[in-house]
Picture (tube, rainbow, N blue to C red):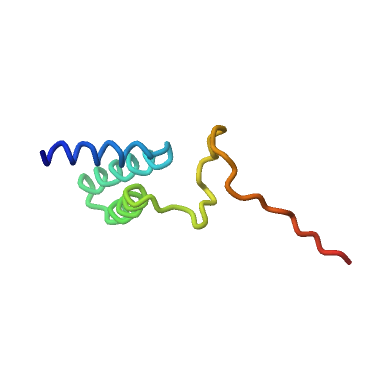
Length: 86
């Protein structure tokens, strides 16, 4: 029963991942492999940083580097451009 709950949780957790998140995770794993083979601490620090970004879905502030919305998604808010008159 615990395995089924974990499998369902893992499936829903990974379903929302995009290409950049997977790329960060793969780079983190490669950097940890390089750390274990060379014992260079910079690889471990960079791998930890990228791994935490991938696992916690942290990236650019304000979603400035989020992927574009799917065409099927509706617009949530509409913004008007403010022009100052001289």
